[in-house]
Image 1 (cartoon, rainbow, N blue to C red):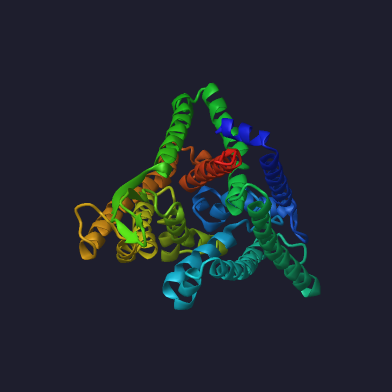
Image 2: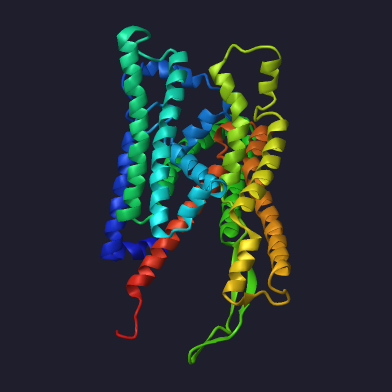
Length: 436
């Protein structure tokens, strides 16, 4: 990886793209530390310090991780890229359900541009809704400088609009990386936000190691074990990200005019991790609803409080439900994104067959069986990676330094994808054709 980055830096065009991307990341990090106006920062720090590890599974903790700490500090980019991610997922799901959107997705480049425009509008709308919800939390936490009158309403409008504008600006920054940088704009901003939390993890590891040096010998085992597990998880993720099932395809020969086409063998690649991190995002979003309600209604009691406490990450129910939901959403996402009937029809239209299976229903059933098996393997991989930090934190008491499985998968996935893009761009620039 380092060799590819070093070689890319030697190419003037790629060096400009890398430098431009780094400048965008700097702008993003600057906006992530500038707070919005009309807030009492001392009161905000106190309110955030009260969010104990019991609420670590809340939507707030999830948003704070993806924004690189900008959410807990109520900065310009507090909403992060989450509205854009949610918007993309919503449009992607609606494309299957709404015929008009499905037609746009099949209209080529023009259709994709229209879908991208719709995604932008939905992103701004979600940013506005999310900004209003966050403002309500800030008001309930008594961190606003003004609590009533015209000043209160003016500050409310300004804060919500700043949050919404930050969402739109981050989306624009990601598009600039796609156009003038090395690509994967939104993913790189998401990567930068998660990596910005690494120094905090290192600080916490140092604190636990100091506790070991002061006599708590448990951490002489727990801290090195955490590092070993972290490296092992990264290796497994790298392996699974590139793993794929290759279905052999044989194309029949056909004569067009005086030329003969086809006759060659190929394969249909199906990635093991078909849904990426989306099943984890869906599952964590649902399980975070009870703990998020606890933040808005801290004085709850009775059966409702007992019900919410069942979904604490320190209990046994949360990992079990998390595991089950990830597998369910993995199958759900695969079912709406990959249609075996359509895949079989595309093969038949291109005179392609799977050796040993006749075109039509036999081919469809074979592809469906392969997709089901591959989805199960990918879902189990995602579920284990997601619950491993939770289980380790509960067993060792080091939950404060547990990096979520979603974060690790995103970081490794973005690194691999970015390196592949740089490698492909270098190959394009060093390709020697027959005219050279």
